[in-house]
Length: 271
Image (tube, rainbow, N blue to C red; front, side):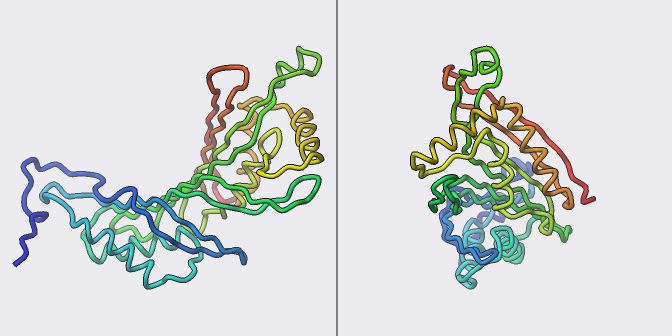
C-alpha cells in the first residue's frame, strides 16, 4: 500500500503560490507559415498548493508534459498551443487553482546579408509562459524575445566632428495577452531589429561591413531611442490586437565599464 505523504497536513498551513519542477529539458517541433523549428526548451512547470496539503505529486507534472509531447510527437502550431495542452492534461491529473508553464530557449531564424545577399542563420532568446486560472476558460500568455543589435551615440557625433562611439546592444519585447492576440516570433523579431541603429549579422563579407557601418553612422541612436522605437514599431504593427507590451534596451557601452538601459510600456486595445 502506497502512503501519499503529499496529502498529509503540513506543520504550517500556508498557501504556496508556485510549486513544481524547474530546469527540465525536453524536445519539441513547431511549424508556422511553412517553417519548421526544432526547439530544446528548459521547462518550469508549477501549480499552487493549498494550505491543507503537505506537498504536490511532482511526478504528475512531468507525466502530464511527457505524455502530451509523446502522444503528439509531430508538429505543433505554436509553443503556446503546446503549453495549453500540457496544462489541460495537468488539470485532469492534479487539482489546481493556478497552473503555469514556462519555456526558455534559443530560437533560430533565417536572414540575408544586406549587400552580398548571403543566407545566414541568426539566434535570439525566447521566454514563453502560459498561465491558467481554475474556472477561467481563457489562457494568458507572456512571450519575451531578446535580439542583439547596436547603438551609435548621437551626442558624441554632434560634438566631435562626426566621430563617435558605437557598441553592441540588446533589445527585448515582451507581449502579454490571450492566445488569439499573441503575434508570431518572426513579427516580434522584425519589430526589435528595425529599432536599432542597424541590424547585426552572424556572417558579413566586406561589402556587408561597409553597408552596416554606414547605416549605423547614418542612424545614431541613444538607448532611449531604441526603447521608444521598439514600443512604437510594436504599436504600429500590433494595434489590431489586445496586448500589454513592454520594451527594454541595453547598450553595452564601449567607452564605459558599465551598461545603460531604458524600459517602457505601451498597450493596444485592438482598434
